[in-house]
Length: 459
Image 1 (cartoon, rainbow, N blue to C red):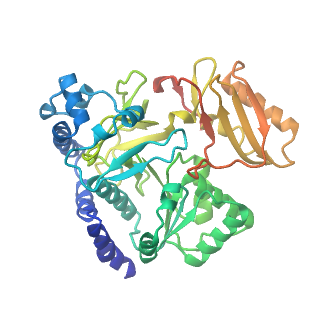
Image 2: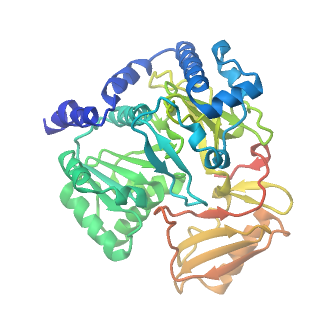
Image 3: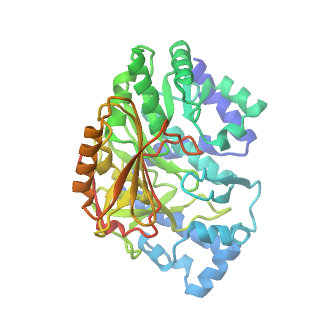
């Protein structure tokens, strides 16, 4: 009954006070998710046309861009018409921030990315966009039989969140029974404290970075702490690539399914996994393209860079925004019956790919498998320099012998080719990024070959 009180009264009151329409939007999303794909695309096109028209009228950057390109938004009749506009990049946002603000915008809130892969991006969001993002996440939460007000543990590490923990927000979280565990404070002692709290708190759901939840699950396993009887119904993993071995250990330790989610602070909540196993795109407020290195849309089944147009970002429009992430679309219909498009795979950032000296590119997973299960390996990270050389940082115990190291290097050479230099550097600890994420691969290669040339990892 307390969950119903939170979901039906307390949280809606909170949203109204913040000028958000997330309650109404969530109800609408729960209706439109059952539309036929044809009807859903028709809805997208209508929303896209109106969104582009408003951007041309009230946003200086797009008013000038439309005139320069000869683009007529009122004539948009299909999603393909977006191709008449150039891409929006992080560099363009940095250079044109004031011109990207709508002249009608009110109550804009400054936001920024964590900057885990480089310089943070500063941008602005309005109530409409926040409402859509909250509604999309809320809808996906309810797919799994949990709701706002159910006990929740959030394993998160962004300083943005932690810096906003003022008294009012802390009070809200207590009322909604949501508890934050900082993901960048994950020493053995801290993780022992987290496990003790989870056993006492008995959350119905866990939300957080895939790597952080997997790290906690591994720690629980090593300590012999069982979480399967705590009462967790679902674990929502987001913020980074969820690797198969991470999903397996999380599900085993918690005794609950893992729901993958894809999104980012700048692009919004994009796709969520349903109980039938499909990763559904939130198409009602998003148009997503996958493009190759030439900027041409790829066919379903091919890997491409994720380009997002957020239809609720009118106050600070994101139109054809290049995320730098790589993904693959699917054409099948989900057994759940929802008409929302399906994503076959999300690979994560282009910087999660390693470049070889022969011109190929492979996903981190191809290298991870050669290291993760080696005796004595307690943590690892591949760092590729601009000259394509690779440093494999290893936090290892005495079980990792020189013989094992040589075997690892030989297997990596077979995958990468003999011309790509790899060296092993032993470190005391693999530290997380500033955001709290634990990245297995960081590539600083000066140029990345296009998605069409990428080699997918053998799983």
